[in-house]
Length: 189
Image 1 (cartoon, rainbow, N blue to C red):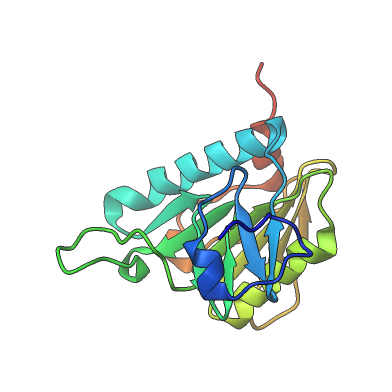
Image 2: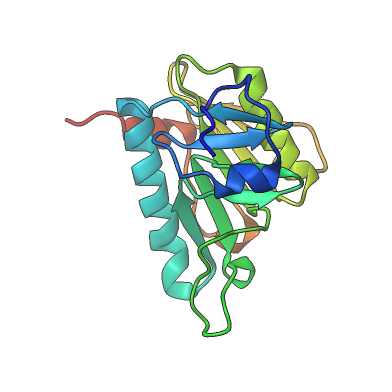
């Protein structure tokens, strides 16, 4: 079954999950297939560095693990957050204790990096959907204005920039990073 990765194509979630993966990834939202935009330079730097930093702090102590572009299927959707962070005890494993290929659980922390051509309300809606289905934290990183909006399941969002300290999962509370530090990673010299 060949289905184009457009927002106008309708199919069921089970049909979508049988399709081959696309580059960039496609997501299944409200019965439609939507292709994510191709990552660009700022997105790639921030995504790579964040995954590295989170895993540097969390993996040795088995606190959490950050996965880039991991398909997560939950709540009738199949999303591919830019970064999906799972607390260690929530990482799905098989009977052999090995990580599963298919994640059918909600990430504990969803991180999205806004691309210039993305609609902020659409990306925010994905974060809110994850929070409504069990995520504990969501970040929307806006590289063009050096800001991070932090979303919670039980209180209003916070807008952070400059020396604003970014909220992380409680399991990573010893890691402190500011918006300014995060965006300093964009400078290569």
